[in-house]
Amino acid sequence: MKKPSAQAVKNFAIDTAYDIAGSILFAIGIYTFAKSADFAPGGVSGLALIFNHLFDVPIGTMTLVLNIPIVLISFKLLGKRFFLKSLKTMIISTFFLDVVFPRLPLYVGNSFLAAIFTGVFVGAGLALIYMRGSSTGGSDFLIISIKKLVPHLSIGQITLFTDAVVIILGGLVFKNIDAMLYGAISTF
Image 1: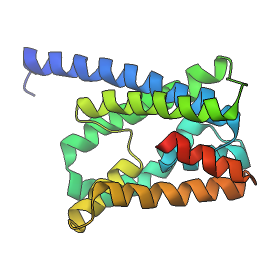
Image 2: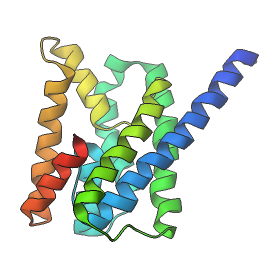
Image 3: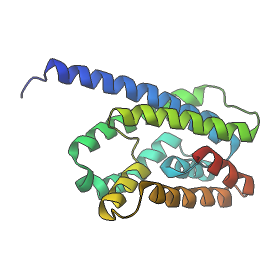
């Protein structure tokens, strides 16, 4: 087996640092704010929050489980390198969602503020992760795959549709129209 170059080791270390920082911010948004305010933002993490609400399953683990079929479907389109980088990111994110943040206090204030801060923290976390060419999996894989298969649709259109489905489902599960509105606010 060939020894990795110094540059490859450096890139791996930088990728991992971005994954950790991004996953911490992502977990703050999902666990500390969205979970406590009983709404589901878009994407697979929103679905995981719905499952957590219904069946009390860990959010990170549920996200990982929901990612399996999406990753298997999109693996061929997105490639091995993107898959491996994203798998590392998914595992790091799951660790923070299921091990670290359940031990920290939840935000129990205003739900509108929780929606805004969910969007800020999740957006900042994902931006850090995307900057290094990785993903937390989930709807990112699905959206990029759909875009490759149907190039005339914009990423924005595909994202809007997939997020809307999850947000509406969240409103139905949480039995609250406000849950849909908070999900939409956090996603914007």
